Image 1 (cartoon, helix red, strand yellow):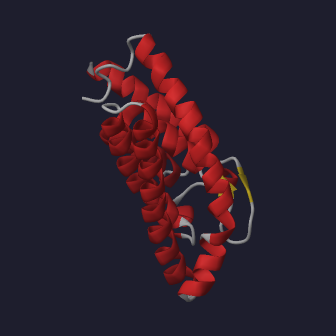
Image 2 (cartoon, one colour):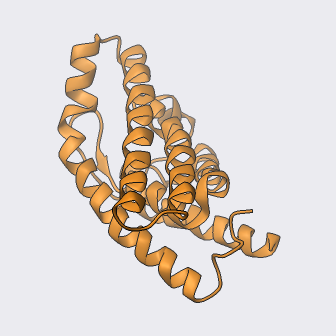
Length: 186
């Protein structure tokens, strides 16, 4: 089981490395696919292992690999204005992953409702950490930080939640049908 868990953790860290750099600049904070990658890691791995895969992704970026938005990496990116969002990815994965695991015991709308709630709650924590650090790094107030870090991204992140619901559940069904997911999150 450990080999399978480690392999999936590495695969999801790789997915974060592939999707994370893909971004469109939108002021100080870019729109990237990093959040979607974190959601998918949480769907496949659950809270504990999904968070580990995101930690690996962050450590690779901290080491200088160009895996962050705009193909950037290194300590400067982690300590820059968007560093709080990167750290927030850990909480996003943990919260979303736990809700996905809990939703496995539900059916129908309750299942999707729990998954959506987990993604929204995790994203809110990520927003809070990212916005707080942005305020510190950029020496700006809350209203200006929210205008730069949250408001322009609400629609994009809502679309990522819808994509994650569709793709994440499809991945879980396929991996479960292939007997690859059953004990993957022990």
